Figure 1 (cartoon, rainbow, N blue to C red):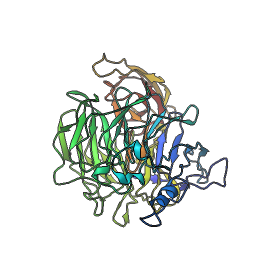
Figure 2: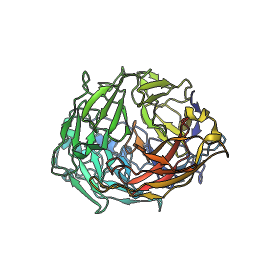
Figure 3: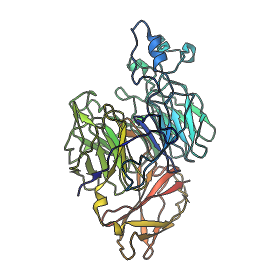
Length: 517
């Protein structure tokens, strides 16, 4: 079986003002309202260059502007190629959010940290490295409120951050990891090695007492909330070859976890997913950030304490700047990227349970390299868009499971809007009932998987909030399942998820939104 690609569609123009142009979607966040928050560069030139090195202020002023943030409602399956979905403008006039970090909070709001160049330098705000007077990202954080479809200011960070990662924790807080403090140049003195934590209950930021001891990765690093035998931890999974964990206390240091990846100094431009709680996959990349790319994959399991291990299978195509997407059948779509001048138009599907890779033989029409995005939709399709050198388009990918008999597709008819998942060390959660029926009467197939997939927040080849949570369940009679909640919030941090059912043939339902509280 092979997946199929819909015809490329423009990402825009705005529904209410057709004169507006499409954008190169670089940041994409899935909201529990069914819409997606998206933005690209600022409205000035895409990559303005300084007139000369003696006039850096021209670079600063030309490069600052606020990205044109939009809400996107995807077109329905089977919609004509002229249907781009619905676009609405939701401008943020405060911060240039290009290259910010972002993740949805427990209540559905989206937290964003840092971004692109500030318009006015303030030397006293951060008394380090004198040349930061000309080049630096903002200290600001921002929140998007889906219910009001509007923005509000968050607290200022201690450190300016460009390309940071934001990860939701087991206790509703958000860890803001690394990023660069000045751009350009990039060097060790400019790295924001001291992480910070945002607490949505108090709207306050706390700086950690210890640096994350890395020498390779600083931008859009892979950070996850994980269970370990020692309790809840935040995991730094690269691109550094050594993994590190932190226990959630501001005064605690980071400590090395497991054995490092051997034979590699680092894996720049790789991608990563968590295919089960505590089980992390790292894919491709390059030791130097330049070609040639690698076709290797590595896995790490925090539940056993094992370090990084090579998978038994490799990618068919070496790639950098690809994006990994968790699908409802617990397989990983690895899409886009490149190896030197060669774009990767054909995707690959990795099965972490069988440890096998399948090459999808149908290529997409547009290249999707650096600055591209890929994200799972509620109906189990995958949106792929953006990318340097590509048209301002997106394409919908229909994974191989859509070639199965759609009459047997499960339809969720009833599920709770919320489930209570205990904090680490708390009492077990209660089971919840899910009712379903086949898409066509009489076409019953047994359900083999029930899962939660967190609403994503993807940019630059990494989804900062995506996670796959398999759920145990019992068949309670035809059309009813008793589903057990995740063990605790290290497995499923509080927030909004998609709940999928998957048949024994591997055909997923359309998801329903469900909130973990």
